[in-house]
Image 1 (cartoon, rainbow, N blue to C red):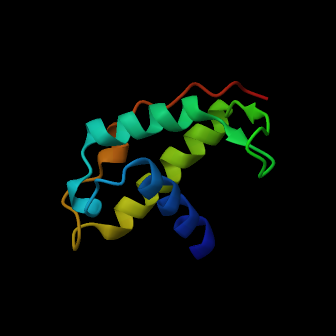
Image 2 (cartoon, rainbow, N blue to C red; image 1 turned 60 degrees about the vertical axis):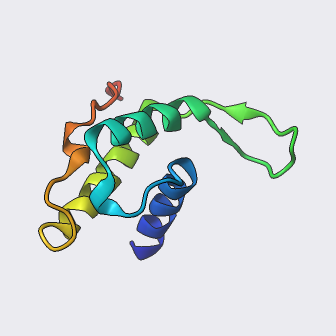
Length: 95
């Protein structure tokens, strides 16, 4: 669990390097991060010319859930509100 949350925060920090901490993340920053995260895709290989695959809506929704859970754990000591609760979540098709 700690490894998953550490990895999640590292992805966020790489995408939003101007963030000074959890207290300065607003709903607008959170929504922009999720939009960028969904659009960027991912690579399975480490080569510079490796194919980029799109992220599924379930992967994006999982990221929102993880970030929201982290912010809930930080309340009320480090943050006043959870901006991830206001993020529009993608529609995940039923399997």
